Image (tube, rainbow, N blue to C red):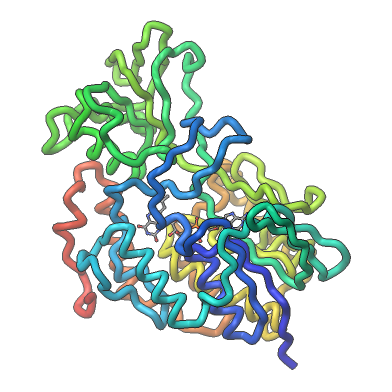
Length: 426
Ligand code: FAD
């Protein structure tokens, strides 16, 4: 017989919404806790930035979203929908729409599947703890009032683009300039007439550099790869591409491995984020070490606490919306007893094998949840668990084509020039 559980979902971003839909579809009873006043998670633009621009102070007031005003998606909408609910044009007709369009899409999705009534807005989860076998206490706070409730399953969907991760720069302690993490970037104006160094290789580093270059004196992009030669970025008179930073100095200069030194006003860290679960009490069973959340079987279930505790959205570099949908289906079906997990020992052994393979290939620990280049292997594995068709071939084709374009620093106009490579793309 299929089992129905009382499930708590933490967060009403993409992960929390699709989790709630799949859990409900499988017959579970769902409550979504959302600390902000709106659904949509990271995609909801918040003009505020935090007081501590590098996020060192753990008592600072946290602003969840890292979205900047000019942000457009870095994947086309064709691969940002769900298997039976495509991301159609709502207000912004572009293939790579702005952040508001994603929020509109998520609102429509939530309305369509009756998720709005499951969400408790402005309700922050402050503690999640197993009391006895299969019974979890979720303590939440709404307008300063605490409430403890009991659930049979907790699905963690709190996102991982809020806690800054910083580059280690020799000499930075004595460097006198200003430092900011991209989490705290919204608009270019504060950087007017400044000389800015941007550390990072990802789409945000490139986007923010171009954004800032509209008002800054100079922007110097520093990439991790050692073989980058100093060069001006296409179509920009004031943006240079450099290799890695060598050293920062007390007199305000910064030297790059390409031999160039410049005096800069700002160092910008577009260097990623840390996983963070401040509410989770598991007696050390689940921990975060050097950005490895573990142990997690297939990035979802901690073997010793499964299936009552699970995580959605931990891996990155994939067609993320579809990945989160598949993870949600898997969790929902495991909780209902339709799909079975291996034994705890087998799951732990699988996790260890994953770590060992990483070590043998020289992959650093902080890349534990990076799927590339095996993103579709993972999605196919999930699809097989829940008995659905694998992600369509044409979406894979779009993904790889876009992946190659966005990895190129000269591809800044790709969003508007992009033509869908597949016949039925639109
Ligand atoms: P989030 O969207 O972060 O949602 C988490 C939710 O949990 C939030 O609403 C938060 O308020 C809530 N929450 C957190 N803690 C608590 C708590 N204790 N109690 C209650 N509620 C809580 N992905 C793409 O597919 N395409 C893109 O083009 C793309 N571009 C991106 C650009 C940037 C700059 C960034 C940072 C990310 C981008 N991503 C993109 C990845 C994006 O983050 C994911 O697509 C997706 O939004 C992640 O959803 P999530 O639900 O896991 O997390």
